[in-house]
Image 1 (cartoon, rainbow, N blue to C red):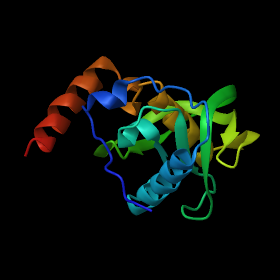
Image 2: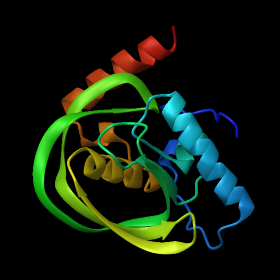
Image 3: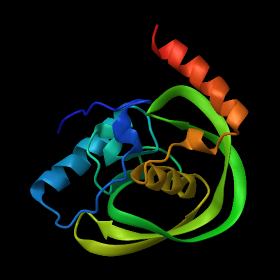
Length: 166
């Protein structure tokens, strides 16, 4: 396994819309394993393939509430149901050191294909639901900072880019 480079804002690959995966090859399986290892080393809750520079529809998520308990890889994930809302603090491996309170669905149902080539539907709430929404946003070229108000977004850009360029 290998540790992959996590792309950070404003890298253009983070704004690309990821392409569907048509075939689960050994390279895709290896990429998923590397992404899990990279996510865990970075102490993340999830990771999308475009965050490591590969714009395909593949995400890995720590599905259990306690990180490190159980990670899964999902190909071509889709949110098929959302329910209720909650506001909670969120961060991102591609926007290191920045956290903000974001409103998301409290409960979700996601369908996709597990890396073992089996269709899956997962229903979850709380922390895993937030992680699924966050990572699927990545596949659509969207970052959690896109949920900020225009004023907060401007403040973020000035602070973050100034800090990053040090």
